[in-house]
Length: 118
Image (tube, rainbow, N blue to C red; front, top):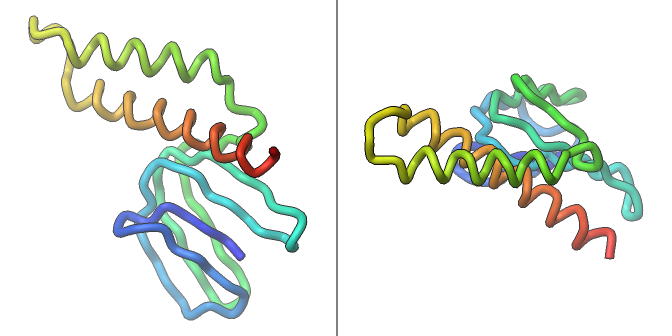
């Protein structure tokens, strides 16, 4: 099974799923290999293409959940929050909002990984 953050909500893709193309938002992609084994990844958004025997995730950024640098994500979150609160017009609000969204989703991916591991 593959679970991914589609734009309209999380999708679950089982083997021999009907063909599908959907846009993905930043978040966690999880591949369930067996009842006891799964792998999690953070993606920055992208596309999911499903064919009956293969699923392809196209993303600009894909990081194994275990490899996410929590300190860097916390710094990026703080920096984006600071940029969004600056009313001087010095920063592009849309860019700050996108950076904040990505940092928050990296931290959520780590949080989910820790909950599953406990």
